[in-house]
Image 1 (cartoon, rainbow, N blue to C red):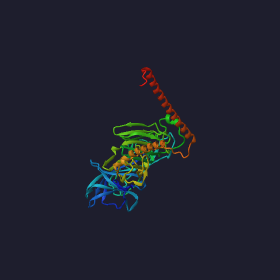
Image 2: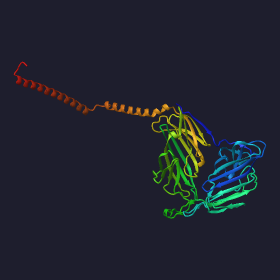
Image 3: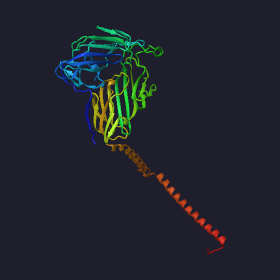
Image 4: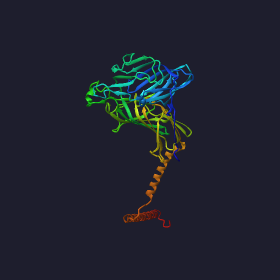
Length: 503
């Protein structure tokens, strides 16, 4: 039976197709309230936009733009309406003919916006690698300073009538920041504005230099394997390569000072927490040397928290590699109707808080005999060629579906759906193979011990067998003679007793 695998991938949100569009001049932004969170290694921008239609026809979509220097740093763009429902809106990456260097996303409104009516929409943007350590190298005792360069104004293809920006740095230790009046500073935040009406694509550089000792951990490669078994188990294994992307350690490392002084290595990472599914069992955490026993696991009602502690603290530029694996029951993720099955699991799972994954490779290993495979992902991914994986009791191999995605953050922790067909009668294949193997083995042993497969005659063995046969004949004759003597002796005793010769 040929393996029928369909390379169809339905993209739900956002759409992968890019189109060339133009900017609708009838749209204006009456008010923009922007919050920039730079307290971690990610830059999280939340825009609350009041959009108004000044034209004569309804508006179905509007464009959201980012600065050219941030175009390749965008990891996630999401939008939702601000009413009680918090309905997520469809977001598609697009291109504008007159602005090829800028990044644009098309936001589809839930309801058509009639002329003269406003609507309030929240747009969330997450940037990776937008914070630069400054200075780039520090000693073990120094604190980590980073610099963020952005825009004082909301970068929009539409005219913005009023706008306010709040930058949350998460610390009181701010070295310097750019000042574009009106500006005010509180304990851990800087507020710019409100600013009056600005033209489209207005840009004035915003610079904040501050202390940031949060974990700057980046997963350079994450290989996630999901092996599905119809006998009630799904084995999950993750091979993780992690590097500290903060300020590089300058000079030697002293473990004595690191353990003795509390302020030594404040930007280093001693441990990090990974959240596993609540049904996770048989958890293991190891590297090339072997099992790492410094981890701690805590079982909660809705999850399993695993505190991972590498063999050494991670400073800027240092790397580590580990393997994390566990098992989950298949009834929570695998659904079927007849021979049709649907697997619904996460394409990527939690690694650590505010995680950044540069490259994700997810492998889904299905049972042998699966066919008509269809994959649906929540966001665009690269589908790599399928191949076959062989393990114990396999005859034709198990199909492996592989996908690849770059620039991953926690917002990408979403479920994929994999539909396939598996004849349930094939579940008897492995038990029958085991029975047939032992039957053939025992039959071979029986034949081997009963047949003589020697080619030449062995004179010594033949003589030994001939002597053994003669000995058996002698013993038989001796037993016959003994029996005759015993019978004669019985008759003689009877004659002596009865004195009757005739009897």
